[in-house]
Image (tube, rainbow, N blue to C red; front, side):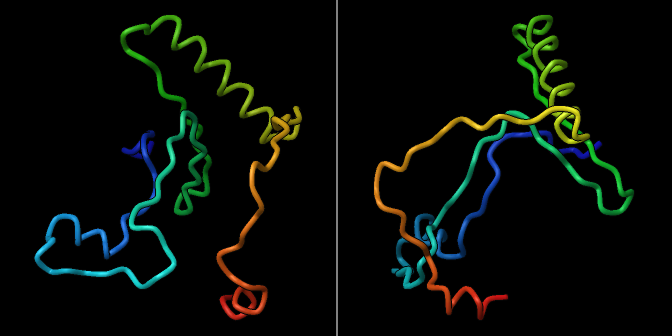
Length: 112
């Protein structure tokens, strides 16, 4: 099992250094954020070396019994979805503003 089982996942840009070292007076001229991260409750980990999938659901130690049962149900559901036994239903979302892309089609084609 991998040592990391959850929490914030993302990146810190090199320019993030400007917050710890303001004397450097770094300016971000790129289009990327200084920091971008997401929080996951359940994780699907693919081990490329062993060619195995590990499903992880974290539990709250303060409510261990209840939290463990909820985690087991989530893992069973996730396994069934990945195996094609169940369909995952996505919540219908609506955009609250216009959609803007970071790259033009031409730029994106060049990135491949």
